[in-house]
Length: 49
Image (tube, rainbow, N blue to C red; front, side, top):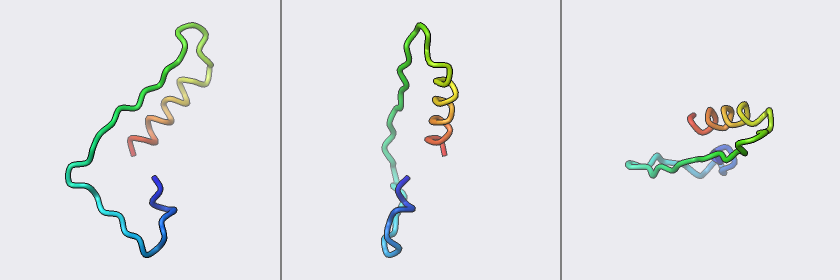
């Protein structure tokens, strides 16, 4: 995600066996904010790419 912020002389290389992690969203059961589902979908899309 920070690749664009790196100096031009710095190179990134993919890991052979990259670690994985879970990302969770916690919302209230009652009266969640109306924008919460759309925000969660956008975040999931961003992390998937």
